[in-house]
Amino acid sequence: MMLKGSRGSGVPWRWIVAGLLVLLLIVLGVRAAAAENLGPGGGTRIIVGDEVVGDYRLLITSAPNPAVVGPVTFVVRVSDLQTGAKVRDAQVEVALALAQTGQSVRQTATHADAGNEIDYAAHIPLEQEGTWDGIVRVSGAAGSSEVTFVQRVTAQRSYTTVILVGIPFLAILVVFGAMWYARSGERKATQG
Figure 1 (cartoon, rainbow, N blue to C red):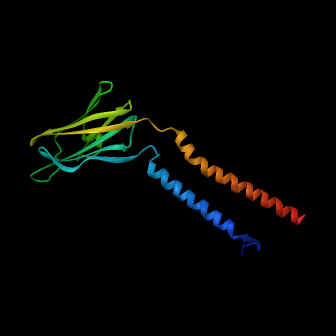
Figure 2: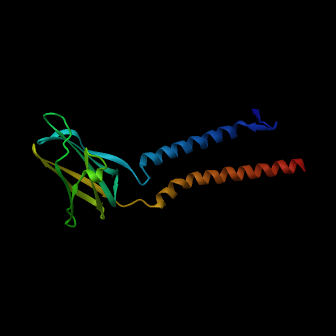
Figure 3: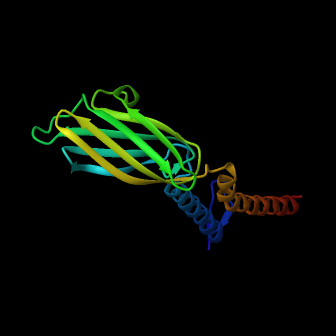
């Protein structure tokens, strides 16, 4: 079966199917890369999702997710249990310890680091990969609350990963380019 192109030449159906297959592979590859989160920013991990912990209702997140060596941002939102109002005058501290090495990091979360007057944030540089034991401590007029969690930190991804994901697409482009070049050579031979 031949389809007529704009120049009047026939296009075999297998070329159309091959083109659609390549388009499908590209779309699936882009979705897989997005799902793996190859970019530098990453998503957000919810440590505590608006739950009652001790004397407060807390929402605690960390970003990026997955966490990599470098700065990790912890955001804490504190609400009063009785009124539901956001607590803006609490003291919030984030502490992390790496049991394998004994290394520990402690930082106060502030509104200034969050960029608003509701959330508290701490940008903590984690320079070693591993499993960090974390604690978020909140204290204020209503009392104190403490949340323990585990933060896994992996090595930074390199461009090698991105290149390896792109190799199959490059190979497909080379094959189609060679097929196009061979086909254009056949046309010149039949015309000349």
